[in-house]
Image (tube, rainbow, N blue to C red; front, side):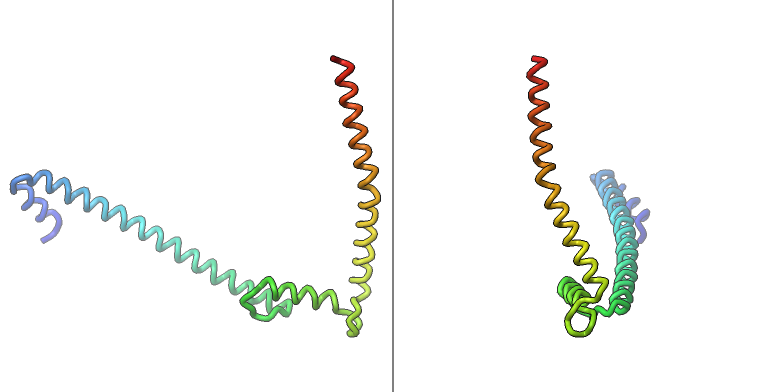
Length: 138
């Protein structure tokens, strides 16, 4: 017995029209849920494929930079960073490029520190001048 035969049989019974409406609405709801499930399965498949592709890319990048397979990526990256900072002459001294970058960084930090005090003073003076000029117009 298919759905059409069931509906025809129900229609001739007492309260048959109401049962037919109920069965039709249930069939519509089932169809709707089936379409949603199909869409979700397709999206899940795409997501799985994307995860697999990203995992492959991550593995290739990790292998290229010499990063061991590790569950804790942050600690592995920190170890790699420390290894790079200590690379150089083999005696624990950083390479000349890293030493130059460190010196440039410290110079920039010192310049920034030296310029921040005059900047703060300038901002205070301009704020006071602005207040004075507003007072004049009142």
